[in-house]
Amino acid sequence: MNQALGQAQRGSSMTRAFAIAWGVSLLFYFLEYAVRSSPAVMMPELVRAFGVPALGVSSILGTYYYTYSTTSLVAGILLDRLGAKYVVPAGMAVLGAGCLVFAVPQVWTGDVGRMLQGAGSAFAFTGAVYLASHGFSAQRLATAIGVTQCLGMLGGTVGQIGVGPLIHGGISLPGYWVGVGVLVLLVGVVLVGLVPREDIPARPKASGGIFSTYKVVFSNPQSYLCGLVAGLLFVPTTIGDMVWGVRFFQEDKLFTYSGAVLAVSMVPFGWVIGCPLLGFLADHWGRRKPALMVGAAVLLLGMIQLVYLPGLIPAWLSLFVMGVASGAAMIPYTLIKEVNPDEVKGSATGAINFLTFTVTAIIGPVFAGHYGKTLGGAGIDLAAHFQHAGLFWVGIIVVALVASVFLRETGHRKI
View 1 (cartoon, one colour):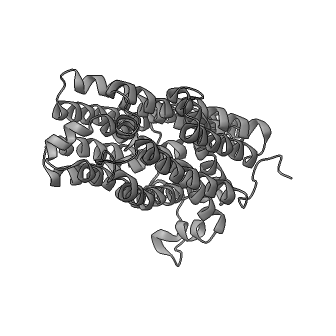
View 2 (cartoon, one colour):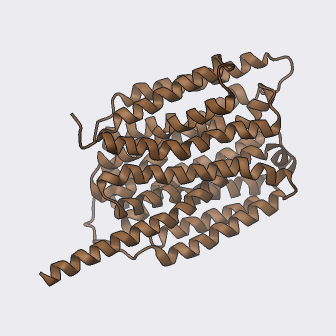
View 3 (tube, rainbow, N blue to C red):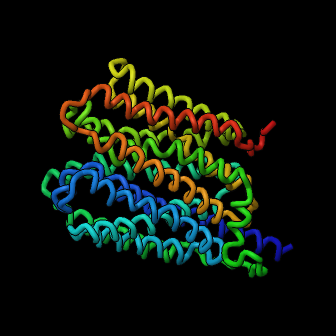
């Protein structure tokens, strides 16, 4: 009996330690999102620093998503096989190095730095979800994942509304990127000491080798659906808001710089509320799909209103509501863990990150080629240009809604 009590106490202590480590890992995700989103408010400065037009800067920034998506697979394998103690801080080291390299104003260092940022960032959300899955019960997991994304999007908000005044207030681009890089590295050192050491059970050799866990995840058609839905709901914010948002509102809607920054920063600010709210609803209702589809439907209505009835409510309020609703994009991250076995938790998160940002990496250049390159062109109809770009995102959200119908319900109150 004493032995059983001791084991229970050790298990409780480990769970608590994982929860604490998860809390600190939120700083990693916060900083990662600030790094991801802040270039949107410094496009003119980046154009001058790299000596390329805005489309060239967009190409440099887009390399982030190529390494983010592929490295997510590596992150999932390493977490499942080695645990989080050194894997997550190693990701922070790569992210920090990427910020330092990006501070050098050359095109090739911009590419390399952004790729390193994407590779290191792949460990942020994947690692936080891994720690959350060890520190919280299944009944609280969707809420914990929602809170995780909440802190990330708070970083996205700071990366836009906070960084813009800093850059225009005298802080140089190199100074900003070096400062962020050093801060990321310091948090990584702290995390090494907090993440508990795990006893990872030896795994029997599988025919798939080190990729055997992904064989499990990618042989499940539901995994692809989760990644598709998350990616399609994510891309209006990752590309439409965080890369092109400021310029579209400046060029097509004739907003001032500060007005455009304020407007687009409302999307990640909305995520701060929407991610935990929709995660809580998914847990409270005991069903994942209704919360997902309600969020996607409100996002669709918000986009239609912004594009076709812009005078109905202020743009910043429209974007805030859309940000809250698009928090539904995180529910597939819970679903993919629940439609796959427990022993592939890390790989399931890595897989959906890979799938989500593969969608982003594909759609981003399509949007840039059709709408970004004509932005600010002579003689174009500004209202029509904004509407056509908005219709693109309306179509993306409609496809996400249709695809979500085919997801399997995994909540404990499923019918």
